[in-house]
Amino acid sequence: MNPAGPDVKPYDALLVLSFGGPEKPEDVVPFLENVTRGRGIPRERLEQVGEHYFLFGGRSPINDQNRALIEALEKDLAEQGIDLPVYFGNRNWDPYLADTLAQMSADGVQRAAVFATSAYSSWSSCRQYRENLLDAVEQVEGAPRLDKLRQYYNHPGFIEPAVDACLAALAELPDGGDRARLVFVTHSIPTAMAETSGSEDPLGQPREAYVRQHRSAVDEVARRVREATGRAHRHDLVYCSRSGAPSTPWLEPDVNDHLEELATDGVSSVVLMPIGFVSDHMEVIYDLDTEAMATAERLGISAVRAATAGVDPRFVAMVRDLLLERAAAERGEAPERPAVGSMPAGPDVCGVGCCPNPRGPRPALCGRDS
Ligand SMILES: CC1=C(CCC(=O)O)c2cc3nc(cc4[nH]c(cc5[nH]c(cc1n2)c(C)c5CCC(=O)O)c(CCC(=O)O)c4C)C(CCC(=O)O)=C3C
Ligand SMILES: [Fe+2]
Figure (cartoon, rainbow, N blue to C red):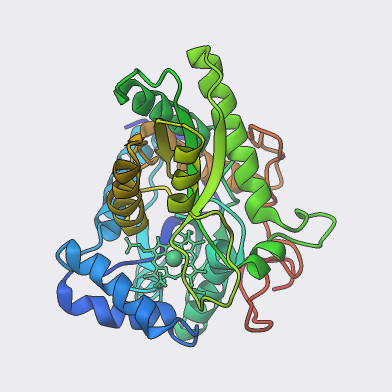
């Protein structure tokens, strides 16, 4: 342990904020009720998604993956001489955010940085977490002050592991990936939510941030992959896990439909890269590894799914770097803000009206309007 580690003032803790998932069959239905309360998701869709969880014994891998990330972070921080406790709180399952904030308050934590396991802007992937933070803070007496760390879809610590994951997946394909298509996949969201993602604030990011941020990330990863292989791999951005009512438009094309299209065009080898996700949770192990892989097999396409960031040391170091960057900014310094691709580093504080809730205005923490 290095006793003279970097300065983390004003923070005395780090909070890892995630989605949460069921851990046993009895959890599945209550978990789905938590996720979809008031969302108008058709019953049929819920039953289907419940089956995805039951297929894996009623246990989502997401909580274990977050615990592994936290363990890796604790080790990384200690190695850097940073003495900072790391807490874990979820939106939809135990450990619930409010319980974690109560524990932090009991431990005397005054001000914490918040790392959310979602790299992009949109109501689902950013502002909803900020609403959850406000709700939880309001429930907990003496809750710490919380600063959500900036979006990291264009941070080198997120992009570099994605490039290596694509290269490793290419190498696993029968032809060594010589003519493979790179198919980047992210979570679909309603097109109305995609259009209003980001901020109108001239100091923040412009609208349609969800798709533009993804384009920036996938173009950068694909560019680096081509540079490394010296081959002209084409690439696409497609979507998975569509939910909601069939009459509501969501981002398309769906990964399965896209594979059909590719097969028609004579493509016979693809890498499926889950660029929208940071670990191998249910969307990855069911929607990609189970469903999309079956589609590829039926179509005679050789497909390999590329790894998510998980506990890649560069991703873990990125969390530490984001924390140190924000700590310096809060102390009034002007830290470097690493960003790669076509978009600049995002703001520390979300802009006014950023990523509005589709069901009407709701206050949230960590924005210029809160
Ligand atoms: C953008 C986005 C991310 C990525 C950003 C982030 O990571 O936050 C994400 C992640 C996740 N989504 C997850 C699970 C679910 N999402 C659902 C429903 C929905 N997701 C949406 C969007 C997103 N979701 C939306 C617009 C809905 C419709 C309902 C609503 O408007 O809110 C439903 C309901 C059933 C259904 O699919 O219809 C479930 C069960 C899990 C846990 C996985 C596990 O257990 O391993 C994770 C990490
Ligand atoms: Fe979701």
